[in-house]
Length: 409
Ligand SMILES: [Zn+2]
Image 1: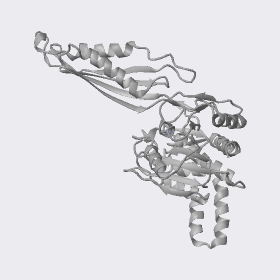
Image 2: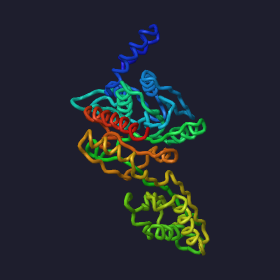
Image 3: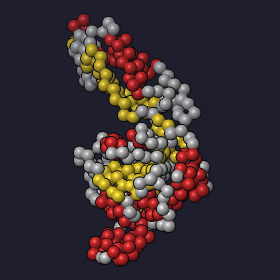
């Protein structure tokens, strides 16, 4: 990235002819993803801080001819960039923010040093997902070298994916839609592969519902239960009803939906006191056979049943953090799989497994799939990727761009 910075400085001082030649140098430099990946890692952009990560990316995209604009919301900065005005619009999506480094002393290289040790690039964000963003840029630089896309390429990059995800992709999409921006297809660069580059594309995600059930009774002495209201039996009744139901059997693309009780809290240190309150937490990971709102009303119904004849109060706090979705298999998913097969020799599994990502927001605006590096070390000490994987990922993204505009333009 030092090379790019100096190229950028030169641009400001030189005349038009030199500008073109300096641009070409920068363009060629950008076809190598490693320096950009290192420069991005060196910005310690732990959510919601940016620390120059988006400036670095914006400088690269500007050099490639993209029109860039920042879209800050609250304390989070975001970047939208587009090259071209025509349809179709192929959009790369991702995030420059990272999770904290944890015990820095436990790392074998500085978590924000961006160093290559042996064959591996080590650093926070190496796989999740600064390495993939560098590969987006390098693939685009290669594609633009001699080709003019018969359509548009866009970058939708947030600084708020690892955090609350309130001031990032979701708000960007709302604002961009209001401004008339449309996306034909979107590819998210999350680390989707389990063990080897090419083994998994994500074409959907399960939905997630968080629930807290609070039962309020009346505290009292165990010897005088008629003067107290014990909340525990009522809580057990609700939990028994919720866990007794098998939600569904799954379907061709999803495993069965599952409700998991994660905590039951009474916090009562005494043997002779009936507690005044009991609380439980649970999460439901659900597939496309379910609907978040329908699950909420089922839980509400079970609570209403348990409330009958109970003199305390049962209340619930239910939050759907994402609905289940699946991008239908078709020409888009096929070209992704073909590009991966061509560059790795592996036919990827088209999967809906794993946790949530910003694809849960994008799916309301465009067909979306996810493919990036191998996720084995993400969020861990010594997060790392083979440098070779970033290079092959660049080739895959380049191949995807080529096939995309052949199929959809
Ligand atoms: Zn990520």
